[in-house]
Image (cartoon, rainbow, N blue to C red; front, side, top):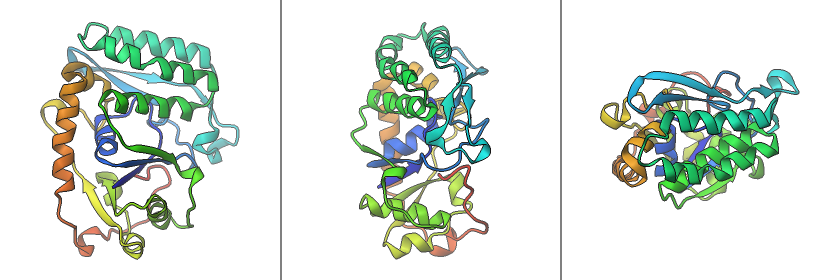
Length: 254
């Protein structure tokens, strides 16, 4: 099973859970960078109050304007962004008993700021969270894999390139994904529909760091295993339920 998603900076729990449920994460790094999206910012909810939220943003320069690809976006102030990331995460979550585990995992994330590439930091932040949760999947980048023109066709070709027999699709993507290209490769499209309550409150809009700091790596991993097991047991959707109007947006291939 594979999931395809842009590199997100300390991703939301819904995104992290989808990647955790997959055997492969294909980092979608060669589509247009989307400003004011999760590719360069994370919404952090306070440890003791989920309604208290603030943005952690990496100021980013797009050398080719709106046509700039995710992999080509560069940070305007990498050293300052590195310092702010470390400081704000400590301020928000340093009181958690699980903070030492996250602090140790942040090393490669903070080191990635030296690359001056926003996508490198975003990918490293997701890798760090997946590693803390004990994920054993494989990560590849779309720019390194063969593909095809057409949006749904492209996703299907990427999934086929890693030998996936199923493609895990977020609820947003299910609104406009065309399943026919996947059927060509005999790949099943499986919708990923996480819960909405308890630990999942705010999971579609806020970073997964807060639930990680509240439940701890072991507790959150157990929850994601539970949700993932339910996803793997999902019956194959019928084609009539999967064909949606509209084309796949280049902003959000999920």
